[in-house]
Length: 347
Ligand code: TYD
Image (cartoon, rainbow, N blue to C red; front, top):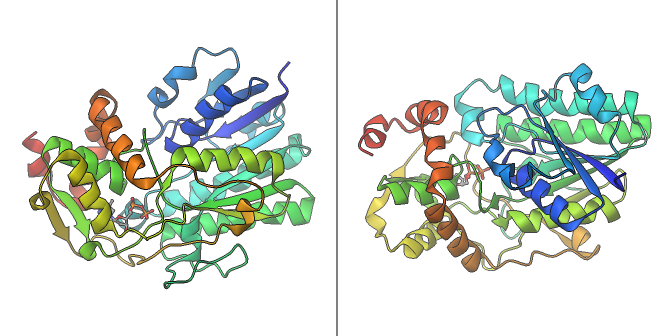
């Protein structure tokens, strides 16, 4: 019998799968139940290394359906809720309804299932620093700061955080919220900036750098983020929010990150294609104070320059992982977003 049965939603996604692999590796007493609907960004290949483990179970479940969640929630001790629609560009260019349904409705459904069937469990809502909105330098909001989400994506995540915390206050459930900065690393779906730019560069395609590339994101290595979640499950306090960020010094603009990627690959700047207006309401800067989680003993351990190099190498070495992803549904999205069907056709 396992010491703890951990229900992970969205465990076939980028961050969720890193967490599943890390938890099974580091905690021999943990059993993982991975519930994932396998929508476009959920990929069973991300958890191929653990799928034979006797401590791992997968089920294709829609987190919005309380009845489907019941048999899984009933047997868990801990829930880590990653499942979400997460791409800002999709939330501004497509029907944002799926963001509300999955991110708000899914969070509500899983909390309601926990309230009904397993009220003693611990629930961790994996959130985002984007709920604080555009942050003027040199500010770095702490967990008490006002939420000012800009996009339908970040607004849906802010709502999900509030729902989660309301279940703690109203029903006395053990609920905590983490809010991370932008993650990067292996297995990230190539719609997000870093894997998109690396894979485009590897394919000889242009790098669509938005709005002058002056924007700032606090890039956090996904393994550092997952270590923070492991710590919070053990040491975080119920009803509390914890920011998780790299606090990069100096901060990096998108243009600088792009240059680092190009340097790793030995490409010239000429592949950068400036694009304007593709991201309405584009936030200029994200940053968070991480004092609260640092006081619990966490800090990011991975250096960004090394992390980018390792990440570029990983995508170079794992073409069979990402090449199939850049067709089908992704291709339709890419064409609609960037209007660059002709470029992809050349490959
Ligand atoms: P992204 O990876 O989509 O994450 P988020 O919007 O959650 O921060 O974008 C990171 C930054 O990169 C953001 O400022 C937008 C920019 N960006 C581009 O310049 N070009 C792109 O094609 C994409 C996807 C993002």
